[in-house]
Length: 58
Image (cartoon, rainbow, N blue to C red):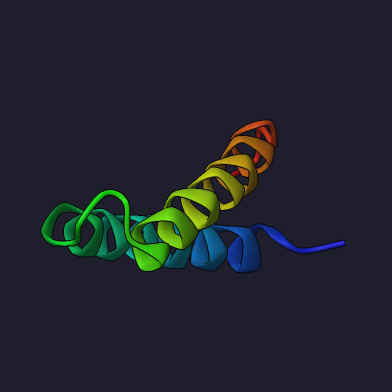
């Protein structure tokens, strides 16, 4: 589906997005809607990273 270069680019982008979301989550009230949405997004991004990690060529 995706080549090695594309997967590496996606992996880098997802890691950076996770980093930025974690920073944003730390300054938000844990009970706010934004914090809950970020927590849900982080789960999805982690699933993406795990799928990419399963590719030995990346």
